[in-house]
Length: 314
Ligand SMILES: [Zn+2]
Image (cartoon, rainbow, N blue to C red; front, side):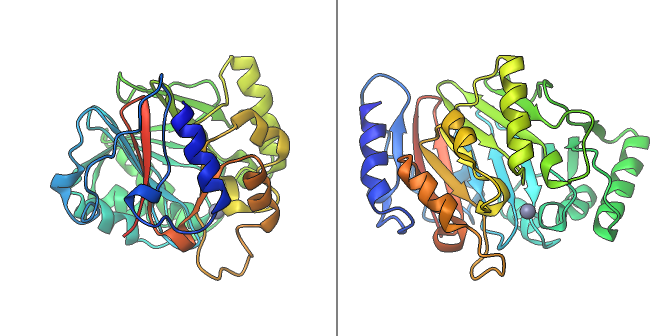
């Protein structure tokens, strides 16, 4: 644990600066003592499917897809979870093909905005998808309606299980993991962002919290609901909500999650000013090591359930 704390403290000082190399990346341990494992070589990881074979490890890619969210998870048992799909129809499909993926076991669409579901239709068209979880929030856009129509077609043909994610559900994807839905719950309200699916993946003492684009109201609901469910919001890695917008990552929510690493998925020179300097300062003051895809590119975190390491690039 000490190693993780020291690494976080050292890196907090250079928050937002790209790591200088493998030794500059954050790593830590959830167990007693010992350095984080140096991890495998990741030089060609994005392009080389064979290098992805890391049996027994949880690997999470926070993909650099511009001003959009997309994450790829390979579970210790080799299952594939995709959480949001970027803005472009092609980015995530191209990534999955480069990885040699043939089946997406679980596809999670946090909410129906185009920067999260832009690649979902092509994934449904080109890959076998086991279960699709979405928020159930209806959105009158072409990209949403086409995605929904395809999902319903596959469901009706018996080729897809389609589930409205609701707080308290547990996703049965890999027995070595605990995957819990913490949000949304009924009624969904009028804001798509605040109805985002929030998911916590726990592997041993390592955990990741995916927050979609929830804002203040959503964070309050997650705080309340997780307390009711008896779920600890604490997570090693926080996927910062809403691209680092100042309307998210409030002090109370951040204190409850108390992450060691935060990943912000935002585009270079995006017109929204994401991530907000207010949020960056809040994370820095909390001693959190921050990675932003706009400056670090794709951020990869992998863990054996105890030690963990962050790798960026290419
Ligand atoms: Zn978004």
